[in-house]
Image (cartoon, rainbow over all chains, first blue to last red; front, top):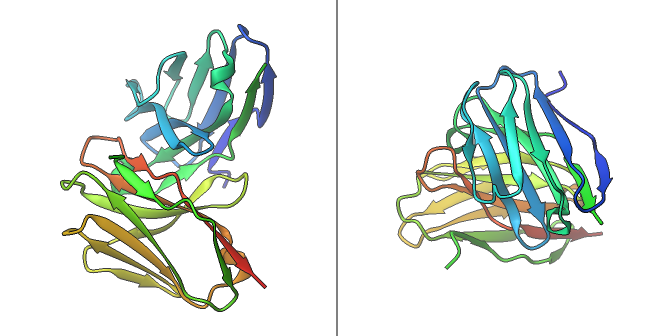
Length: 114
Length: 110
C-alpha cells in the first residue's frame, strides 16, 4: 500500500521557470492538501481540496495553482518560480477534514530555486 | 500571539529520562488537537490525538488543558528512537484549516 506518493523528490529550478509537483493517494481519501515547510516556520497550507472538483486557498497561495485531477491526484504548479519558493513541499490526504482525522503525508519534494 | 506556539528546543535528554513538551494555542474555541512526529528530512506522521480526558499510548501521554489553552506530551523512559521533532496540531474550528506548530526537537542521548 503506497499511501501518498509525491514526485519529484528533488528539483532545482532557475528563477522564472515553471514546474508541476505531482501527488497521488491510493487510500480513497476525500481531502488533499499541499503544504510548504520552511525552517522556523512550520508547515503552512498552500491549497487544499475538500473533495474531488473543489479547491480552496490556504495560508500562502500566492505564486501557486492547483488541480484536483480526480479523487486520487492533486497537483501543485509553480508558474514562475522565485527564490522565495525554495522549500520542502508536502502533499497530504485525509479521509475527511484533517481536523477530525489522521492525515497522511507524502515524502516531500525538496525544491531549490536559484 | 501566534495561533500555535511550541518551544523549538532542542531538548537533550539521556536515555531513560522523562521529558515533557507543551504547546499553547490562542483560539479558545479550538476543537481538536494532535501530536505528530517528524523524523529528520522525513514526512510528519500522526503520533496521537489528544482527548479532553487525556490519553496514554505506551510511554506517551497527551493532556489537554482548556482553561490555560495548552496541550502537553509526556514521554517516559526515553529511547534513542524517540529522537525527532514533535509537531503540535490544532484545529481552530475552521473547516479544513488546522494549524501546525513549528515543532519541538528532541534528542535522546546514550
